[in-house]
Every structure is written in C-alpha cells, then in structure tokens.
Length: 243
Image 1: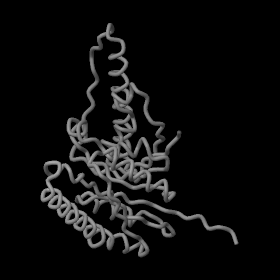
Image 2 (image 1 turned 90 degrees about the vertical axis):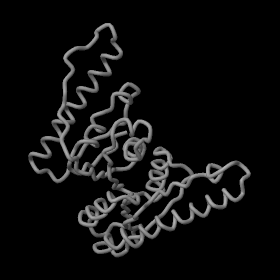
Image 3 (image 1 turned 120 degrees about the vertical axis):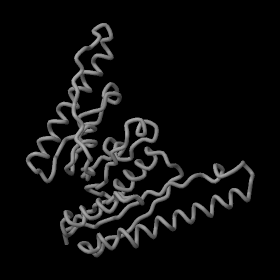
Image 4 (image 1 turned 135 degrees about the vertical axis):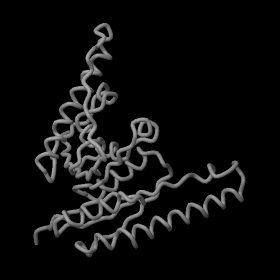
C-alpha cells in the first residue's frame, strides 16, 4: 500500500485580537485534506526573575502567576480560536508550547522547530505593524520566521491604516561609500516593495507570491524587499524559501 503524504499547516497565534483574523482567513482559505495545528508559543518568565534569588514566597507566587497565564492562554486557544477553525476543519487540534523567554527570536525559533518537526507546509502567521523603534528593541517573531523557517510560508499581513509614502533621498555623501551603499539599497528595496504593494492593492490581488533568499550583513541593516512587503502590503503574502 503506498504511503499517503501528510499535509500539515500550522496557524501561529497568540492571545491578541490579530489571531482572530489569522484563524478566520485560514479557515476559509485552507483546502480540505490538511491537518491543521493551532499553535501558540507561550513565553514563561524564569522563576528567579519574580523576586530575589532564594526568596521562596516570591518564587511560588511567580509560579502561580505562570500557571494562571498558561491556563488563560490554553482557554483562549481552545475556547475562542479553535471553534472558528473547526467550522471548516473539524479535526484541527490546539497546541501550546512553553518557552522560557519573551524574546522574539526564542519564540520564533520554537515556532520554526515545531513546523520543521511536524513537516508543516505552510506556516500562517500575522505580521504586526509595530513602530520601527519598538521592533528594534522588542524584535519581531514574524521577521524571525521569514528568515529562519525552511518551509514555504504564507503570511497573512494585517491591513495598515495608511500607505506610507516613499521618500527618495536627494543627496548621498560620496566619501562615506559604505553608508551610501546602505542608503541606496534601502531606497531601492522600499521603491520596488512599494510598487509591488501598490500594484497588488490597485488590481485587487488576493495573494502576492515572493521568493525569499535571506539577507546579507549589509541588508540586515538596511532591510530587504521582503521585509518592506511584509510590513506594508495589505494583501496576504506567500514567501517561497529559495535557499
């Protein structure tokens, strides 16, 4: 008897309102025949951060708070989100994975590992359009997954309230060659990305498909075409990892 290939799709959610949009979009768009995993990576703050080292009451209180938060997250997953998916995919299952950090890269790594271990293809995740400064310090789970998961990704990018106008620099200091290269790369990526986003919006495209090769060191600073589209496109993106 020939082996039947499993088709698994991971819906990456959290406890925010954005998860309802991810779930509703996925429930409508995912074809029948896929195993749907509703995945929430739940960050847990280590006990010793809840009080002084050796402070047993503080550690116990912190542990109680962690259990309450984990239980709350599990209820949100199973009582609020799961029923919406099961309207079209009744066999969908909820999965809660705990990690010992709130860092975006740790959460993203856990998400990618689960997807890889379960041969998920694609992963569906919502992109939060955070301010640049906030993202610099807090990080972005979406951006981490874009550049580290080695599977096809389908990202449901939440609509922006406005379309950012692109500004082209009029002067570049030629004696600062390295900085000039960065600024040119940034400008080119934003212009091309802006054109892609604008065209998809004007034409009413239901999906934008792009290739993703990762980023070099210089583009890590200046951002890439993919990053621009992740933050600004109002349409869902399908990113194909090209190696």
